Image 1 (cartoon, helix red, strand yellow):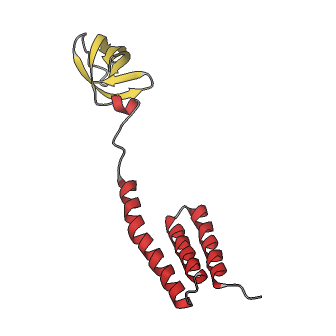
Image 2 (cartoon, rainbow, N blue to C red; image 1 turned 60 degrees about the horizontal axis):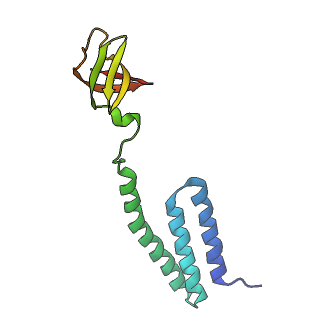
Image 3 (tube, rainbow, N blue to C red; image 1 turned 135 degrees about the vertical axis):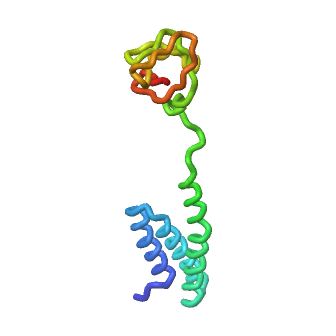
Length: 142
């Protein structure tokens, strides 16, 4: 019982898919796609040289095109900061006296409990302060 070449290429594609799933390395997926392309070539009657060339060309082309795109997307930082991180660095207005032990500010249209970064610093109502951190539900200001 002789197994056709295209079946071997599909077995190779599956074998390359296993490390893709186990290691999350996309290069294995690109090699698996190359093996599928070689299986198609074998199914259409291409010789072994054509099959290997198709495998190499498709695999290398995918790596050359997809890897730089993936690396560029991985390197980009998210443009939108949300939640507590979005409040850091914003300005607020003191509503009740703020010192090292507490107080109240108006931040992003809401009243927040606050304390000064420097325990000796005191901020009187009406003064603008900068939010340097959020500690639980308390804004740390300076």
